[in-house]
Every structure is written in C-alpha cells, then in structure tokens.
Image (cartoon, rainbow, N blue to C red; front, side):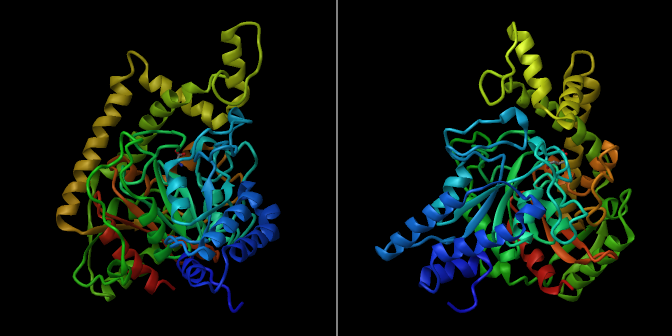
Length: 479
Ligand code: GLN
C-alpha cells in the first residue's frame, strides 16, 4: 500500500477504487486512537469491534460488486448525545448510566448508508452544556495541540477526534456554538447548518429551538461532503425543513468570491474579551477575502449584543423542560427510595452535575408564573430583534464575518469558577443559533501562543452555498 489517504474524500475514493480496504482504513484509525486516547480522552467509547465488523461488511459488498457510497470506508466519530442502537449513549452524564437506545439517530443511519463507519462516541460537556468539555461527568478532554489546554466544548471530543486523526470526520451538536467554538480551538473546520436542514431525530434534546447537528472535518471539502450526506428532510423530526436544500459541489469548493459582498459584524469584532491576537488574524482573513475579489465592509447588526443574555434565558428554559424526562423511571440511573417523590429527587440529585442543575434552576425560574413575561417573554422579543437585524444585514451582504471565539484555547480551570466568563466564550456564535442561520468556523493561523484561531462565516438561512464559497476561499488563503 502506498501513502495512505487521510481526508474523508480521498479515503472514500481509494476504497471505491480498491487501492485500500475499509478494514485497513479502520486499523489505521484505531492505531491513531490507541496512540493518543489515554492522554486526550476524546472518547466515551471506542467501537473497535463494531467498526471492524462494519468494514468487513463494506469490503465484502465491494467484492460482490455493490456500488459504494460517497463516504465508503470513512471512519466517523459521533458526539455521545446521538443515539446508537444497542450502544450506550451517555450525554457524558451519570443520569444516563447503563441506558442503551433502542434506535439509531437519523444522521447515524444516513452516514452508514453512505458507507461511513462509526468508530467512536465522543466526550462532551454534560448534556452539551458548556464550552470546555470540563463539565463531562467522565472527566475533561484535552486539546491535542497543548494538553494543558481545553479543546472547547461542548463537542470537544468530536473536535479532538478530527484534530488528532482518530477519524477524518465527526459529528457534533451546536446549540450556542458547540461545534464552531471547539473547531476553532482545535484548528479544524466546524459547521452549524441551517436550523431544520439536518434531522435531530435521535439527538438527545438540550434546547430544541436552537439545537442543530453538524460536521467537523480537517478540510472544508470533507465538512461539505458530510453535510451533503446528513442534510435532508426527515418526517421523524417535526422541525425538519421540507423544501429544497442545496448540495455543496465543486463550484462552491473552488472558493471564487469575486464580487461577493462580505460584511464584518462590528458588534462581534468589538465584543467584550476578544483578544488582540485573534483580532489580528481576523483582520488578515478579511483582507484575504478582499484580495480574492470580495467587497468587504464593516456593518452593524445592533441587536447581536443582546444575544448572550437572550440565549441564557431561552436555552435553560427549554432545557428545564427537556430534562424533566430523566426521573429515574424511563432512562438510566435510579436511586431507590421509600416513595416516588424521594426516588425522583435522589435520582436527579445524584445523576445531574452542577452546571446542568444550574441550567434547570435558571430555566425553571425564567418560566415560572410572575416572571415568565419579564424573562422568557422578553428574551423571545430580543430573539425576534436579532433575526430582524440579521435579515436587514443580508439585504446588503451575501455573508457576514466575525471571529469564532474570543481567545485561543484556555487552561483547565481558568473559567470553571466563573460561569459568566465561560458563557462569554460563545458571544460570537450564539446569534446564529437564535436566528436559525448557518455558520462555519474555518481555521486561520495561530495566536501568540501558537494555538489555532478560527474565523466564522455566517450566511442567511439555506445560504450554505455562499457560506462554503467564502469558507473555501479562507481555507485557501490561511497562513
Ligand atoms: N456553550 C454554550 C452553552 O453552554 C453552548 C452549548 C452548545 O452549543 N451545546 O450552552
């Protein structure tokens, strides 16, 4: 065997052409996991037996003359909040201990139908609540570029899986930035697609009006190939978009941005806590787009500044409702007690970690009689304002631009005592969740500490083609 392919697209082509077998691809990636997993802890489970069996089936199908899919033989790591039939799905929470879903999430089925091979379930902040993976009940994941630093979160394990070569692609979920922020901190590509374009059937709910599944990849082309496979209407998800969705092809990936109107969101570049080294890289990225022929201008999306405040009412409110189902009766952990009320209380007390409890309390408070209008109701109004301001910006611009995260990867414990400081990690990513629009983080050089910096491209709903065009241009000009 010559040089083994590393990107998803190259692997699939090599498997289809018979230059490499799916079994060989799986062994290469299991070896990469073996080499660094003990140090990085990206995975809640490594599915070696299952992956070898799937590779064997794929190779047998090829030998029998079957047509192979676009992700033939490509290992994929899944955030451990996506249901896998018969395989523990934990949300990195003690409350789901021992639970095995009786069904696969739609994204899992779609990936497998395309030939991809699930190789691992990845670590996350408990129930996807966090920005550093430090809120996992199973211990944090480490950043492969510097193991004294966090990988970001909540999809930290999925970002690390790609950055460390455990799998060429992975899936995460993004409610307020949980794909894009860890992508930025780990130096990989992370996409939050338009709300409704990727089915959430089988994604364990955090905040249902915001949650979206999306891909990580080492390249824009791999993220696009994965998006093409997982996007599409699903009758099993009542919020699934039923209209036409674009497929990303060679035209978008060529990254031609001549004449493209690009707006720099001044409120986000100027947001609290954006570090100088991140700003410098961001400016270089904007200059690179202009050198490539785009018309780049500063613009204002005024209501953006209220995004974080609105999110921390809406997301906990929805979470408090979604997490009511973990009562010791239907899923996972149960602490036995003399009566049912004590059983509920003791199960939830033992099963949920501190951040999850904080969110449930915040959300319950925001929804309670007498406070509902002042908090939840007000946050919904702010949400409408943000959507309106973005819609106005997209009358003048094809895509918008901001940093992805305020800083490069930070140290363990740096923000754990101060939830507000942690929440500020998502100041640039949250607005896209509130308005349902797509956004992508593209690696763009490093900060003063030598750690990766990400630049975010935002587009209007269903604007993935323009988003990928700009992202491909940035990838092509990244230092
Ligand atoms: N960090 C944000 C939070 O803690 C976003 C999480 C996410 O996108 N899942 O809520």
